[in-house]
Length: 345
Image 1 (cartoon, helix red, strand yellow):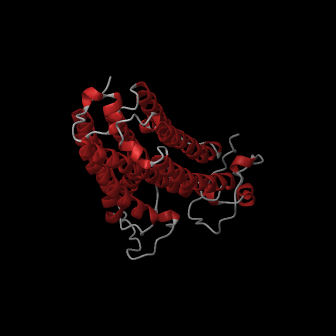
Image 2: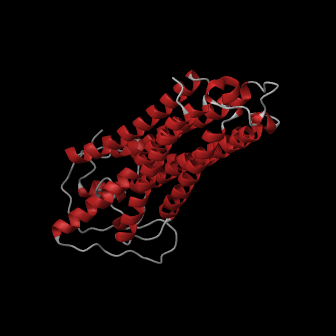
Image 3: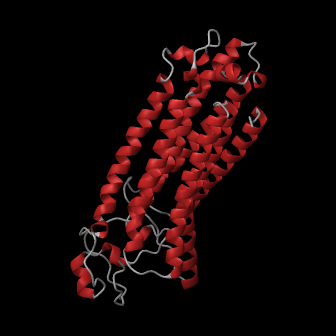
């Protein structure tokens, strides 16, 4: 089924609006809690700008049409105005870059979240560095593929003679989709040590497995998008519609844990009659301290302790496997006593 331009526009508007609402909610909650300024705040603002820019671009190229749709879906595009086709085809290239930027910004937000809750775990730290490198390299590769798949570039808006398969941008699509899936798997691998760390309560396990479910859902949406686009011969309306859906899903997956965690902290403090500690309103960009940023999980202080400290407390009763080894990340609070919990293999 080939979607028409109005369907793609309506879905695009809805997904963009929902994505901006999610990001704006995170921003408002963050400032309400007076959390310190950090890179996640910058990425949230940039994400909103990119998403708004993409939906504006989509609006125009869906109206103007593209050379690819004239060649392979002539019934859905008026090809009488070559100038409009050229403009639409150029805007498609810009929209693909903006989509990649929006998706990769959400990956960066999720990577910052995982990095924070797994800080001090050696294996997770290594995977985090690999993931950051993959984010940068794959983004560059996708942008290059966007503009270089058709050479010379004017083949993107050429109708006669037929420029060939390059206008369908399958290479760009595959690089983007496969890279997205691989990075999502890396993110899930970073969170895996949390399950092996120790025995947890039912609510903690629900929170943990919810993270895995959200990450898996993101991968499923990416696969569905790839399959449908190939099935419809890279129809631009199909690409636009499912790109909007994937952007919304990625935005939800990347921000839901932080929003939920912030609301949970506020509710817990409200119930206990405590006031939220103010952050550093004019602080520098950087990594916030752990007490300032309770998130999806209420992480126990065992995560921040070295194996020696854990064994001395009786928490660690078996050798740590390589995936759950620790680094000494400095002194931590000793305000709460811990009952000995055997390490879960």
